[in-house]
Image 1 (cartoon, helix red, strand yellow):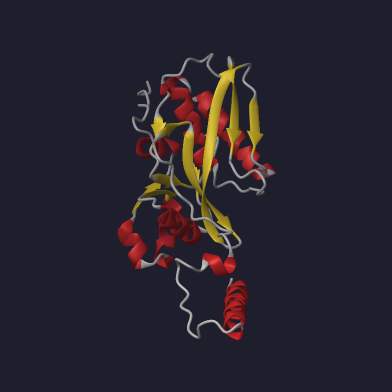
Image 2: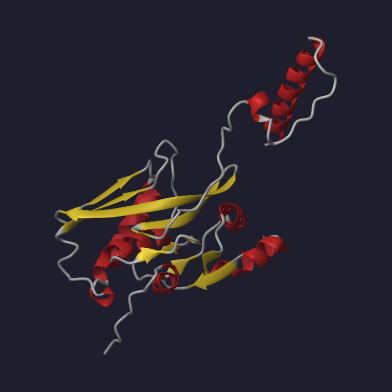
Length: 241
């Protein structure tokens, strides 16, 4: 972080010193408009939201060593026998989260108006872009489940809603870590509504007041609550009994 900043500033200073030594002008002003001519093209690009609501694509957030970033979970279906493919350099824990999300969706198919044979007649592919970057952890469970249900019901996912949370086979949402970093990453990307596990409500104390004023936080205990806030038209759960 700070060490890299120091190196970049030193690089600018050396180039300016060289120009002065060559007899050019004595005063140089470095701005956001001309800094690229000194340091070259940007190496890190600002995360941006999708341009439109889509079926099968949900916005999640991840903790990284350098802070946090948004990620997109993509799910597609194709004729098959119920197989699940996972790509995007996913770790074992994230793969298990995807399997749990699929099992939940299969066990509640009728509640979402999906034919019971739907899952045995289709294969599903879950992909998280930027495959060169390893990804792991359980917190993408709700994002995978949302993208999966979106594909099954043909309902679009709201592009300006980000989510994080671990999902159980019963559809309960468990708390996660790195809330501050994830919220700040979402806010930088333009997210206006953030879905978090209910037990993580206490972690908002670490979020700057300015960020909290710009965003709406939705706390959930069950995956059905996520669908109601993230899908354009949430599937209605049938009354029991």
